[in-house]
Image (cartoon, rainbow, N blue to C red; front, side, top):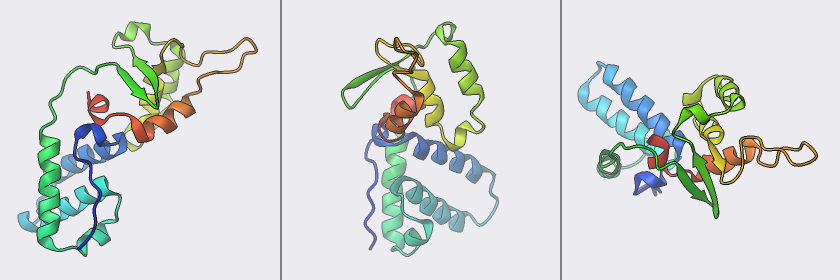
Length: 169
């Protein structure tokens, strides 16, 4: 028996997990192999994404356990209902805002978003550019020209703490 630590709410899922999940489901739609074997492989990959364990470790588990855990995950994921992003997240006591009106996005944000080579491989890069600390502007500078809210600090926080539902929205 394998011990899996899986999210129980969509909010607890990290953006990288949700992005991999979306890519996996798209790839599975195109597969034409044996339906049953394909489904078991899909379940192992899904559990690997959300648990952090390797697919090989998951494959060593009991088939009933794999199916039960993947069914719980699928149930949780299927409960997600798309909506507009709230536009505000609080991480470690600090509020970050996302302007839904893209006419207010800065040129710097546009440039930095365009510089991301593959958003799907690391979606938090885009999230860290779009969500800015409450009361600050993107790459705001202090009186000496130093950036007080660098994107990489937000990136590291969002990589672990941005709510999954807000990310999907």
